[in-house]
Amino acid sequence: MSAPVKVTFPSFMLQISGELYAPLAGAPDRKGAAVVISHPMTGVKEQTSADHARLLSKAGFYALTFDAGYQGESTGQPRGLEDPHQRAEDNKAAVTYLTTLDGKVDPSRIGVLGICASGGYTSYAARSLTAVSRHLLPQPASGVQAWPKGSHAELPPMFSSDISQIPEDADSFFKDAASYYGSQHGNHPRSDQKVPPASYDLMVSYDSFNFQHLISPRPLLMVAGSEAQTLHYSQNAVAAAREPKELLIVEEKNHFDLYDDLTVSGPKLVEFFGKNLLRPH
Image (tube, rainbow, N blue to C red; front, side, top):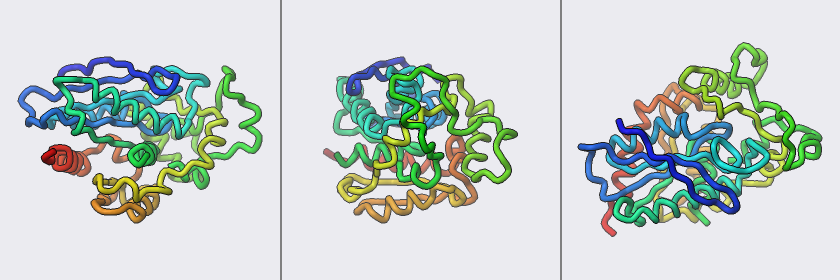
């Protein structure tokens, strides 16, 4: 498999670092269809986004992965900041970048794939998850004031990637997260799980799914594991959307299992994008 091409594109005042995967030789002709792939919170483009990009390029699609603003190889300070509005804008900017690839990508055949929190960011971008921050993520009482946006001080990790450091009574979400990010496959030096506490102030009033119905008539597919602690977010998002919409529940899989186990979800994604991006203009 050929290596992806390094690319950059602007998003607001930031420079976004991405990797463009071309369709593999001998793959089906997808008529210039392309998919933007947006990574999870605390992730980078080289992890699960790359797994999905390889799957889609093998199936004949262009696939664009990228690091969110403030994260990975993209610019922005403080490092690791999770700004939902910036994340949504990054997805729009990625789509805009793909429309400039004359002779490669058909601007009318571009889809977006969001993983984890990016499932919310891509939904938000598509109609212009973080309600999770209200219920699951740690909420520092005074951290927002103590960590101004320009601070370069050492940041606290959202969770440890060392499973032995996760308390026995911790929510299983954090245990599963540590298992993935601490694994050889999930670990990456630019993914350190350090999130400035100012992120929570930005996230707490943000809701990806308030206007979920506006995605229609564009088709929506959501994929979740039956054992995922976040399953209800997908269920609520699909319930709030209008047709065409679909929820695929992968049995006996948790939230993080589906980051790199594409046995069930992979063929479904290929089918979904193949069907909907190749419709007659």
